[in-house]
Amino acid sequence: MKYILIIAFMGLSAITYAQDNDNALAWYTNLEEAQKVSKKEKKPILLYFNGSDWCAPCKMLKKDFFDTSEFRDRSEEFVLVMIDYPRRIDILSEEQFAYNKRLVAKYNKARTFPKILVLNNKGKPQDEISGYSSLRDTSNHFAFLDRNK
Image 1 (cartoon, rainbow, N blue to C red):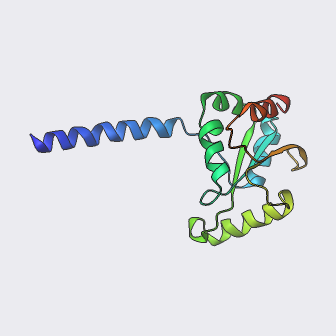
Image 2: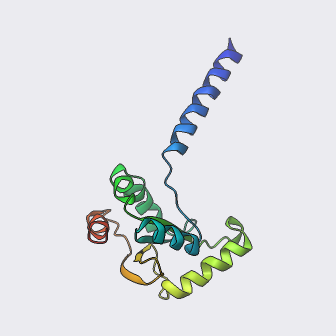
Image 3: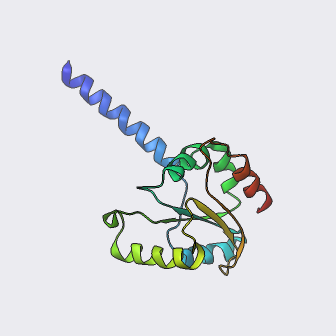
């Protein structure tokens, strides 16, 4: 009986995990690839700078903004690119870390995290929003998306 319960629990966990992954957004980690898609689909690029292992506002923004159905609906208007800039260099490959560091130097010189930019398909910035308040109000972020569709 004990083994049956364990197997049933593992099966339910696998189904739940698969459903969560089906809902995952398609974030590019390479801007050049995203630019090709942007040009083909005639969509602007949403470039998100994130400090995944150290940035508390980034973690709050993920939960309050990026992980919502409202964002998911609006995100279809953009090609999504996430540039992670962790302090722990073992989170990314050396090549990805170096690539991300170059993009931070080009597009996020002040190293403000979180930072979201809208770029055209040639990589030219059109608009940006940075930071996230501990009040956890996402209205400015949604307004940012709406004005940049």
